[in-house]
Amino acid sequence: MSAPATPRVLQPAAWRRAIAPLVIAVLVLSVLLQEPVAALLPAETPRVLVFLAIAAPIVAAVVLGLAAAYPRVLVDADGALRVRGRSVRPSQIVAARRAVSAGGGSAYLVLTLRTDAGFAIRVLVAGMPIRGLDTEQLRVLREVVAASAVPVKRRSESERAFLSESVLATGRRVDVDRELVLRELDHLRGVRFKGLADTGADDAGADAPEVEVAPAPPVAVVDDAAAEERLAAATRTTTLARRIAFWALVAASLVAAVLLVVLVVMESTGTDFGAADEDPLVAAMAVAIGVALLTGVAWATVADVDDARRRAESQRWLAAASAEERRAGLPVAFHAPWLRAPGGRMLGLALLVLGMIAFVAVVGGPIILIQGEGPVVLGIVMTIVGVGLCTLALWAWFARRRAHSRRVEWLVEAAGERARRGLTGDDPLSR
Image 1 (cartoon, rainbow, N blue to C red):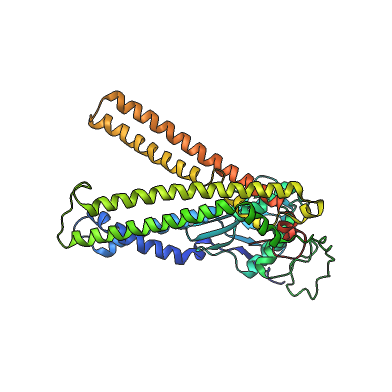
Image 2: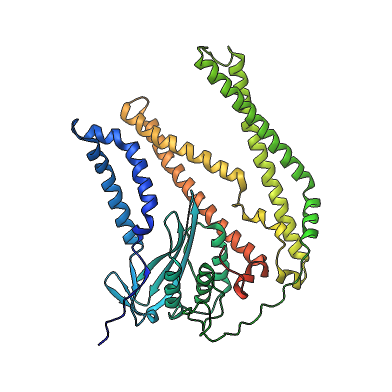
């Protein structure tokens, strides 16, 4: 009687893939927290125990958190998945959701498989600094997805969301079609996608039957150079103003930085400085900072106006485009302004200022109430206003984020076959 086949690993324990960032986090936090933690312990406590007192909770939190988020998944010889004591057949997997996130030196692609009973299996497909799956594990995941009951028929809405989230990388989860998942997994494995009938069991494809893939419809040729010339002619004045404001901002910032270095060096050598109306250098520093702020606002305003003109010109192009040109998609020269969040730079600056004012009010109100440094009514009013401004700032931030997602989805639709070429042909889908 032969021994049962060894289960294959679809997803190993997540902490094994996070050893490098875990070690770095422990070392950095141990240095930063060493003195505060040592002050809480007896004076004769050895430094090794202080280090362990810091490292142990960090390691435990990371290991338990990763284990909860990305459990170990095994696949038996009969194809059933084993995860957290459960056995899940591929045919029970009825939905897949994909999330891409990036920022702060990290980037992750996560696939969530959901069963008909509502059980979810999160898989860290690719990432850094925490590593994703290796080639063999990607092959196992592909076989599971290919055998699943995830719907095959795609909708244009899900395609737009799929591609827009690849651009935005905000971490928002979107429903994905089985074919889209298989294409992406094949791209990550470096294998040509041949169709849904391909199980992925043989990378070389020697034993697997060839699957006929319908060729992508021809893409109309759009003269990108002509689009760039048209855009340059329509935005000549705003482009010039944008460049002037930018270099003025650079010059003012450099002058302010040089004056700051001079003041710091002179003060370190024993020079005492008074108020701005007493010391010319201090006055010059204040003026340089003011000019830098003004030129920064001017540049942001002009740049937003320039982007608005570019978006308007792209809409005029779409209105005058033929059916063939629309199918080919909006030329690349028109894309960049649509990738910026609605409201542009000035709205972002306004939200930043609003957030700072709200923070000051939320902190200042309770301080007035506790320390009695002003009328009680003032403290109460500041606290209420601060909470209200915080709520307004958060609402505006989330609303802007949702509007940004809708804008990018519109761009994906307007880009036509330029964006969908990876969905219909053999070009890789993932960025």
